[in-house]
Structure formats: C-alpha cells, structure tokens
Image 1 (cartoon, helix red, strand yellow):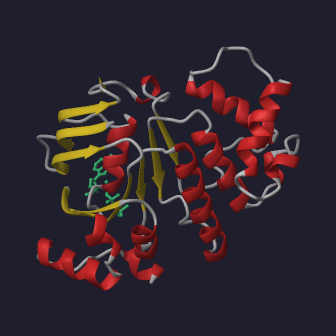
Image 2 (cartoon, protein in one colour):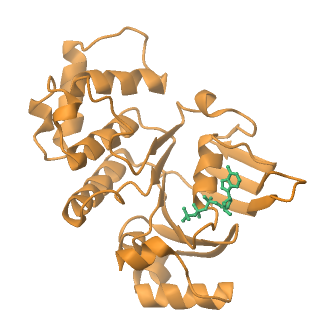
Length: 265
Ligand SMILES: Nc1ncnc2c1ncn2[C@@H]1O[C@H](COP(=O)(O)OP(=O)(O)OP(=O)(O)O)[C@@H](O)[C@H]1O
C-alpha cells in the first residue's frame, strides 16, 4: 500500500544551511492501517507528509504507493492517490462556492471521475449519503455557500472532500489543531467514522498525545529525522501518555520537546 524505502531528504545540500530532515526512513503500511505521528519540533513530521504527497522530492530512496513507484513524481501527478487535510479549515474549501460545487471540485481533482461538470441529481444523492455520516445536517444544505459554515463544519466538509473518491493514502496534517477543543473532539470522531467507513490507509500528524493514542492502529514517534518508536497492537492499546513519553526519552536520549505539545497538555 505505502512503502518508503531508505527515504532521505536533505534541504540545501552542500551549503552551510544543509539540513538532513529525513534520515533513511523505512516505513511500510498495509491497506486500512492508520498511523498517528508525533515528535519533537523539527523532527521531520511535515517533511514526511510532504514527501508522501510529492510536495518535496526525496533526495535518495524510494516511495511506492499501491505498487506504483512514485519516486520523483510531482504532487499533481499523484493527487489521485494521495489526499491531504491541513490545519486551516479555510484551506481545503472554496468559500464562494456551494457545498455541492465544492464536492464536484473534489471529484474532479481526484481524476477518477468522467470529466462532465456540474451538480447532477445523481451526484446530489452521493453527496447527501457522504455528508449524512457527519451528523451535522450538511446533507440538507447542499446549495449553501461554504463561507456560511463554521470552522468545524468546514473542516468536516474538507474531510469528506478528501475522502469521497477513496484515495490510496489520506494525510491528516494536524487537522484539528486550529479548532476549539469541543469542535476538535467532533472532528476527531468524524475522522474515525470516515476512515473506518472507507477503510482508508491514513497518516495523521498530531500534537495531541491523547489523539495520537486514541485514533488509529499504530503510533510512530519521530526525532531528528528518524522514526525512533513504532508501536501497535497490545503494546499500544495498554499505553498511557506517560508510558509513551518515557519510551521516547529512553530511545531518543532526551525528553520530547515540542512547544505545541506542551500547550496541548
Ligand atoms: N523547505 C525547507 N528548507 C530548509 N529546511 C527545511 C525546510 N522544511 C523543513 N526544513 C527543516 O527540516 C527539519 C524538519 O522540519 P519539519 O517541518 O519536517 O519538522 P516537524 O517535525 O514538522 O516540526 P514541527 O513540529 O515544529 O512543525 C527542520 O530542521 C526544518 O527547519
């Protein structure tokens, strides 16, 4: 499903600003696996997502998605395989267009649909089905402009837009970080629902350690460009945040230092 082989990313190579952001990362994910990613500031979490999405090309190593070797393939040529939801709810949607028009855009972006444009009756039915999973009543507001929605409703819609065509990989980039705690919890629950409904292979970066253990099937911790901890199954099920922090300190040789994690606790 997703394979990173010996993936390395060096920014500004051979200059005084050289930075090795990913150091020989090996990562394999099976279909339907949901990984949460945590780590210190500058550990390489965003670079990892950018490498999977194709926003940054690897310096060396390989990336394979669904058996296709995508090493060197730019983001726009893998957009049909990889969807991403960002922190800012305003980033994923067009405010001046209706909910239905935004969903049509999402279908067209995926490249998996025929090129006919517009909001057909058949599509309205599909959109209603997908939106009803959210339990926010958006299925009855297909013709409302997205600019009328709250931040949480917009982020929920962004999740539907990112998943409606069942991407091979869903990337969640701290997608609840900009929301108030109550709305963030709603989006967490919606995320669980959507990911399980479509059985999506998902990578979620988060600064919320509760969410890191609550969502998904596996947690990786990054430090200084490496995956230093990779836990799943019973080990993960029984784990508390303190256990996680203790393990991190043991394997990395220092405490987890991340300004946003401190704020979240
Ligand atoms: N475009 C870039 N040019 C140069 N250096 C970069 C670039 N992007 C990231 N870096 C560096 O690569 C390292 C990893 O950065 P990255 O943003 O992946 O970390 P992160 O784990 O997402 O951090 P944070 O939790 O602080 O957002 C950092 O030292 C960062 O300064």
